[in-house]
Amino acid sequence: MAHTTEITVDWGDTDAGGLIYYPRFFHFVIVGLNNYFRLATDGEHPMERYRRAGYVLPAVEASASFHSPLRAGDEAVIETTVVDSGTSSLTLAFTIISAADDERVAEGEVSFVFVDDAFEATPLPDEIHECIRARGDA
Image (cartoon, rainbow, N blue to C red; front, side, top):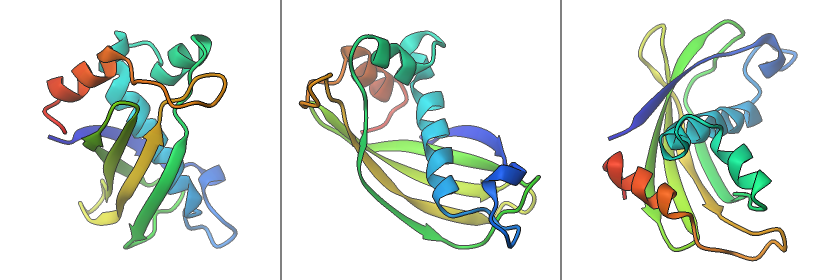
């Protein structure tokens, strides 16, 4: 079942035309990812916790389809679902829905690999796998 995160588009998220600048959708995907995994870290910021321990979770592949724009001040909901998880990687699907009219504005997938400070793939922490199972995902 998708985990939801509410967001508000800020003026700084928009381009000169007043529309959300498309890479900002991926920023909101990361907001949803961090919110999703707060369950695994008892509310602590997940990626900061892992960074302090010498690990990071960089994106290695991303795709998206954009259906309608968002503007500064618009509110939306990000639905985050882990659709695949391996030993050291995970792929999440996201859907961003406008809160004003319940319209789907963007959707896609992003794949990540958990790496150590030498940038070598390393197993995801057990708490991550447990969180994914607790949420009923992959």
